[in-house]
Image 1 (tube, helix red, strand yellow):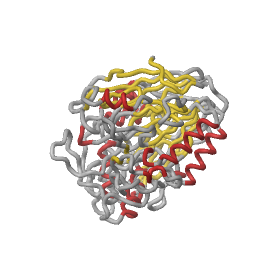
Image 2: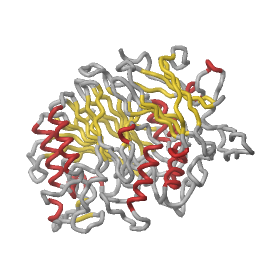
Image 3: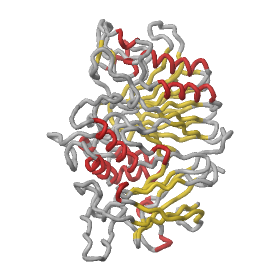
Image 4: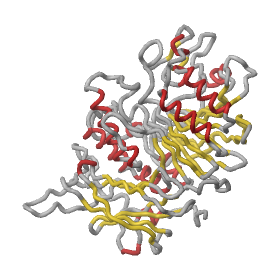
Length: 524
């Protein structure tokens, strides 16, 4: 049955439930860990400073997450926690006051996993709203709200989906997360660059702890500082998430086994980044990394209304066309048309093709990291294409486009990476102005990357004129809000005027409607 309410109150975010008489404020102070004395165990205090989260819902369950930390910015990345296992009690309830508890249990938060906890639930009601919380000793966590997906075959339940990408702590305040939480979505998709691995900037908006991330301690510390942000905690506590990484979650512009920086050795660095990513996300056990490898791509099903295919465009891609480095290439770069080049890898391509062939959902969403449509970024008669996006892997894009079209899917590509809102139509043949549209691409701007941004750049109109299949641009920070139903997909591009100061209001910079069977953007 559908959820009984669409909201979780600020009270229940600020306290883990009045029923036990214990309130844990989200803004509790950061404290250093209290060291053990003699044989007595280390006292624990303020352990829920990183909040709570849920993710990867299916029709019978969801993953619940928390990570214990008494000092989120502890240089060793371990959050000031003692070197011992900590029992973490958890509860799931039908109501936000936890009067109707339906599940409970205990998990061990272990130091080798940075005291993170992943509770993988099954046997819940389909299409239902739940509330959850954790307890350690006498401390209660903030409460979170989550949802299970509707049962297979269900098409009548709308999906309120929001998505965004690219959160650079030093570049601004995470207010877009707060505004996204205020919309009370059913599901949030994060499309890469949850953290930035860089060291200190010369003129940061906010000071970052630690230098450039090279090892496990560094990545754990960076994730912990992000998770301690109250705006991000609100977004995690309001709805389940599904996530994929991009380059800055590891190393700028890495491609397959090739890093941008050759020192330190990349396999060890990638393994550390993947381990910290899994520890800090509400992900399933099947996604847990094995050294420098991580099984990331998967399909999340929202009844029979929508399939969300979350893709990995980093781990299996061929090296950048023509130059071997990410950048802009011209018409003389014929390497990008090589039929053997792939951004997904052969196995993931085959998997995606099979999912599109077998899909019976109204909508098939492709959640992924880099620009999918063809895009000429150079004004004037010359052409310039990004070899980091799908323009550097044209044959691979053609195969995915064909799989959408030939299987008659209502395909919508959801994209991050480029730090601006874009929207356009995916074509079979971009050289033919009469070529029909096959799918729609919606590109979210960043949370903070590139700072405050602008509504329109000096060359925006020229870019749109030279790329007629691209219909919309806005260069502020923000997120994309959508509502999917059997009849249509409503799209609002939500923008904020600034992130250099906190609490900016959000406004709708563009609105569109997409109809099944008509892969075009219609102004709302």
